[in-house]
Amino acid sequence: MTEQEFRDLASRDGFAEPALVEWGAGLINEEHTHDFTARIYVLSGELKIVCADRTSICQVGDHDALDAGTPHTEYVGTEGVAFLAARKSG
View (cartoon, rainbow, N blue to C red):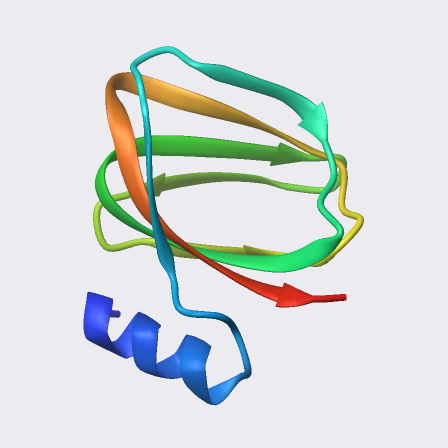
């Protein structure tokens, strides 16, 4: 999937305009939930997302999604990460 395809799909599915998120190397975003459904598209670096039932390792060009209320932890790779995050209520 390309960045434009991600943006088009997010828009078609009712997500808000994706926002750029940049996190530094080695960051650990401890287990948490969101009150929105999220989709991401990785622009640079690596982001590992760990949920109770799956682990995703997302690198450049990869995308992932989490339903609202899903407990997860995020781990940033050694080079940091930049990704687009699209949100949809509920």
